[in-house]
Image (cartoon, rainbow, N blue to C red):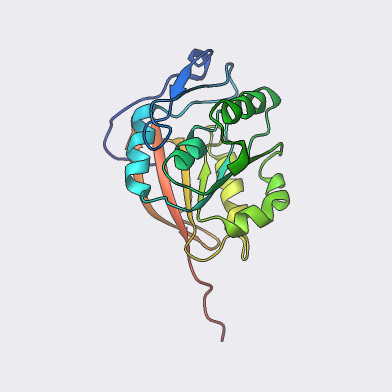
Length: 209
C-alpha cells in the first residue's frame, strides 16, 4: 500500500540538489560537513528526516551497517558517527561514488567502511557476506517503487540477512511496497512530506511439517 501519515518535511527535487552541503547531525562527528553529489541521479535525505529516523533506530553502538544506493553516504555516515562499528556502502553511480569516497576520507572513516561499485539488486550477491553480518540495512533507491521492490525481494531471500536484522527503505509516499517480502516483514512506516520510511525486520523461518 502507499504510505500515509503525518507530514513534516519535503526533500528538494532532484534538479535542485547540485552543490548541496550536508551535515552530520549527532554523535562524535556531529556538525561536520560533507558533500552531496550533484545532478539528477541522487536524492539527498533531508536533515529532518535523518534526525527523525535515527531517533527511532538508536542505540547503534557496535552495529554493522549496510547502506544501499548510498549516494553521499549520509545514512551510513550518521550511523558511524552514532557508534556503529562498520559500514558497507553500495553505490552504482561513478560520480556519486567519487563524492562518497571523498566524504569518507574527509571524515576519517576509511578504516571502518568499504565502498562497493555495484548495480542493484544484482550486486547483492557480491556483498552477501556483509549482508549476513549486518544488523541494519539502509535503502534509498530511485523513486518509482520498482528498484525498492526488487532489492527488498533479494534481501528477503532465505539466508541473506540474519534473524532480527532491520531494513529501512526511503521511498516516495506514492510508491507501493509490500507488507512482507520473503523473510522481511514491515513493522512501521512514517511519512515526511513526499518522503516515506518503511521499516522491515527479518522473521524466523516458518516451521516445516
